[in-house]
Image (cartoon, rainbow, N blue to C red; front, side, top):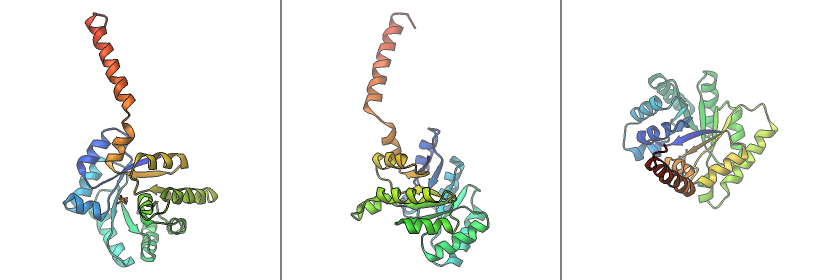
Length: 220
Ligand code: G3P
């Protein structure tokens, strides 16, 4: 499973990339706003830290506008930047055109399996169903991931990767792993939560204490 970081904070990309497990990064306009920084500078810096796909989102609502923004971003930014478009009719139209030009597209704001299938048919490299936002709305976000993965299992010709997004806690990620999700994008805090275990910390403390005793005895 690919693991992406969902952030516009360059320091977070630097931190998680250093672990050697980071496959890509997703940004969105809200994350860019929260960073307080210039969009292109942030994406350029992130793209230099992580060789995997870096999603940069267009904001036009019409297909022509999306295509113009996407082509400008591709011209100005490093080659590993891919284009994020919303799951709308214009978004599908832009996806089809960009895919024909060999530009990777991540179709975002996917909230049902039919949207995911339509995005795949348009030629998306990734489709991004939002788990946490469905949970917020009183629905079961993981059930959507299950539906999409079941759909994909019926159509092995689909090359589009399912990118589980809006993941809020480790249990979401573990459930994605069980469902065979291709890609998950998670905040840095969830990366850290996944790795930490109190028994790892306690075991390491004990090993170090015992090793200190071995050294003190001159047996190292
Ligand atoms: O990648 C999409 C993700 O950033 C949305 O997450 O937590 O704002 O629903 P959230």
